[in-house]
Image (cartoon, rainbow, N blue to C red; front, side, top):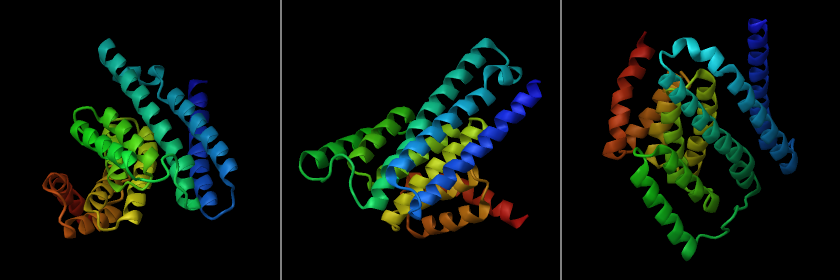
Length: 249
């Protein structure tokens, strides 16, 4: 009975993830209006999160945890990841993608005066907390994007931090993280193809979360040609050899 229930949940998960992708494609080509798209996508993402929580429940993972403390930490990590992913995936699909397609800004409208100053302040705070408190940094980058949906730095570094957080999670969390991070990074590249950080991180995300060595090398090559910052280049140098090794097999 337990195996049948697990199989049913996995089937639901596959259906819902595919449905989210299909909704995005239908909206982009104009087959869905904004209201229907937002409503359906929000529903699918909520249902996906619930199914994943059931699949990765403590009952199914307890055998790999060695102590009660491990179990507590695992549960907390999973909860935080799901919260971040739900918020970000819904926002990307229902807010920034809508803004991109309609050619309109969301809240904030213009970027003059106090709003511009506020955005600069948020970015400064986010940079300072990137690797000290990734969740706080992600929240700050998201606040920037509420005001300025086209902010390339916020799109790029929120995606990168999400990918770093998700790397140690379960496979389904990684899938959601890959979809969200790839969306943000590809959007950043569309806005500014000469911003090297987005190419660098998209290459790493494609390799680490997507298992796509060919796509990874394409982006990493562009990244290297654009003279990325030293701290970003250090990430890239560490992974280029791995990508080349996989492609040479």
